[in-house]
Length: 343
Ligand SMILES: Nc1nc2c(ncn2[C@@H]2O[C@H](COP(=O)(O)OP(=O)(O)O)[C@@H](O)[C@H]2O)c(=O)[nH]1
Ligand SMILES: [Mg+2]
Image (cartoon, rainbow, N blue to C red; front, side):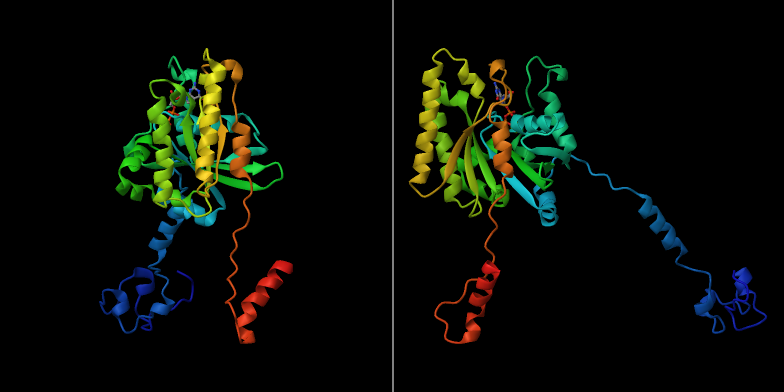
């Protein structure tokens, strides 16, 4: 208690030292003589103790894969590029994601260096299963099940020019797309695709060229893209690409050149079919786990990274000037737009 403090107007009351009111009022501040303003019996002490505890706590993120809900707030506070991988199960989506993570673990790649990630555990979980040290005889990644929904992996990278980039890669179960192709009510469950700046349709080179799977797979692959486009699941300026995976598998076949030209033809026909409807789709090839042909090594990943992180043209946000204006004031938007573009 500070010296000279006077919390009770009654000079005979010792409330300041004993906390007991001479007139027996309880609580003490219900006494008319008691001056709460001068009181040093600070009821806020408890609260400030709590505050100290809160300040000393560190919030740990789980660093598992992000959900739709997490990325809404993430995208509001960071400039991000979102890439969605679409492909039936076992086309190599998860392998591609863990392969990219592994490359950035080693060092700078495709003009970018690793700066951080919100999904390190998620990456590590997928990656360790793709390595020999996991105890498996062949490298593989866990199968993503439909119940898992969509999961986003995050990479925070910095370019050689010092520019920071946030990449979100969406991995979703293959079953979700298979069901969406045949049952359009499932499209509602693919709402996250509206966030994607780029969508990659993964085409399994092996399944495409095996005599027993060839016909059905070719048809279904195209149908999936058409079904998604016709149901308007993408945002208007989305970039679409077909990514042929596992090209090591076809490079080792006996009739190798025939198979490669078969793939060539399919890719070209696909690009042409969509172009005829005014839809730009480009085709690229990758190999992430060249276990059918180790000499081939990794294919297409450096270009893929540069492509995915390439700066996009700024979105036109200026309002359109109203047509045929009579009054000068109605032409202000047009005047400002010109100043903005020329200035
Ligand atoms: N030979 C070869 N196998 C691959 C390649 N990429 C993925 N795989 C294999 O294909 C299988 C399915 O891959 P996964 O990434 O789990 O497919 P997802 O279901 O689309 O996520 C796994 O056994 C992988 O090891 C590749 O480039 N070459
Ligand atoms: Mg998977």
